[in-house]
Length: 60
Image (cartoon, rainbow, N blue to C red; front, top):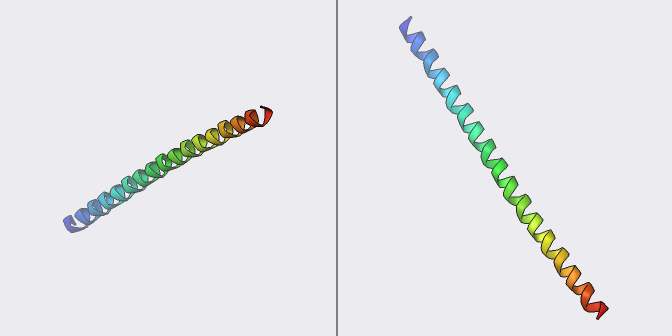
């Protein structure tokens, strides 16, 4: 009886660890995605400013 109880506890612990790892990986993935979005926005902003500068040069 006690052996089965310990076995069940071990499975619960393994499941909790697995869930914790999954949550951690998911959070890391979200953080990476946010960083990529920030980088993209900065690059688009740079392109827009450069385009605007080029337009002003053409007007002159």
